[in-house]
Length: 103
Image (cartoon, rainbow, N blue to C red; front, side, top):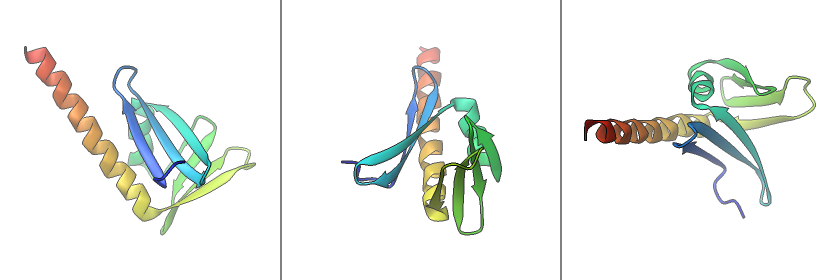
């Protein structure tokens, strides 16, 4: 069972980001982005990536397929948490890479 409503994971080997959004107790929608795509996604008000549009509105983030056959909403507070969590993980990854290169 998936406990967190939203989870962001950074794969440091492939430099991909996984954004998992809990739809129900037993279903999670997983979005996979390159590192660059995800940085663009969290830095703009509206981005279309991998066939999905992410639009930041006043109280939530609306996520919908380009053909509008599926859509999700997440609270804006959760979106801010995703951005902070990602920034923390990216900084740790960059610090580790810098430490390795200085040895």
